[in-house]
Structure formats: structure tokens, C-alpha cells
Image (cartoon, rainbow, N blue to C red; front, side):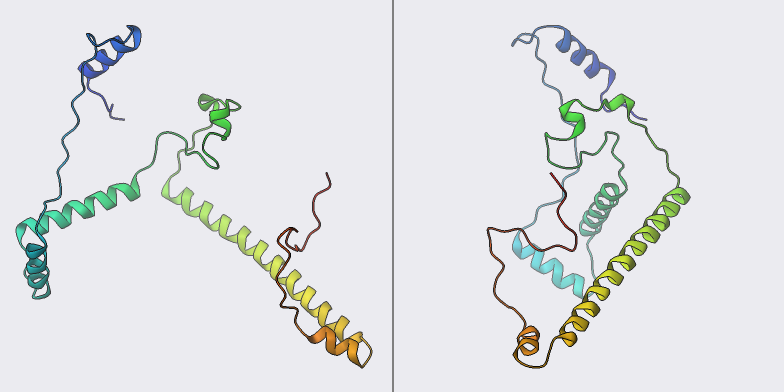
Length: 182
């Protein structure tokens, strides 16, 4: 693993952490130089796009496209060293101090392990989906049977008319399961 800070900067940082900060001992750190994408006027961009339609690409444009592709590729494949915070910022278990970062288990996964995990996750999700689909179709079938069991007349016709009135805003939405007991 490469360190992000060179030795001289780390020594400066360590002295800053030990000493009280005042204007005499603060040393500005140099920002790493990044290659910038070139800037061009709208007229130049229009001319380049017209040339690209004809299959002509300048060396500067090729370099710019390569830099953009590298940046996208690096952003996609980057794995963060710190644990990702899931949920509301500031209310996660690490920030609240309920979980120690050092005690978290770190997993080293190979590509094959990742594929196996994805397959297993897919199997579980499909199983849940099939169960939910079966329960919904059972509910619909039972609703149809209940409507058919109604006596002929106005009651059956009234049950067949869909209720399109909006749900009251001050009540919870209807769910397939009852709410948990308090």
C-alpha cells in the first residue's frame, strides 16, 4: 500500500499535531499537480465535433479522451480503504461510537468469491420474489372468490367497481402484514 503523504510532509504533520498551532509553525502543503483537461472555445469545440464526424481527431483531443477514460476507469475500480458509511450521516454506528473501527472484520475477496456471493444473493432474492409473488397471486385469487361468493344484486356489482379515491394522508398505507406490536 502506497502512503499518500511523503516523509517530509508527514514529519511536518506530526510536528503540527504535537505543537500548538499558531501562524509561525504552519507550513502550507503543496497540492499534487493534476493534469487538467484542455479548455477550448465553443467555436473550436464545434469545429472539432465536425471533424470527429468525418473521422478526424486531433492529438490533443485523443489525449483528452484517454485522460477521461482513465479517470472513469480509476473511479469505477477504486476500493475504499475506510468502511463505507451506510445510512444517515452522523447517525451510523461508527460515528456514534457504538462500533470500534479496528474491531471490524476486513474481508479479502477474490473475483471468484465475489461471483459466488453474487450468485447466492441472486438465489435468495429470487426465492423471496417468488414467495411474494405467490402470496400476492393468492390474495388476488381469494379476492375474486370472495366477490363470486357474494349474492347476485347490487352488492356484487358494488364490489366490482374499483375504489379510486385517494388514500387519507393522515393514515399509514395498507400493507400485506400487520404492524409490529409496540
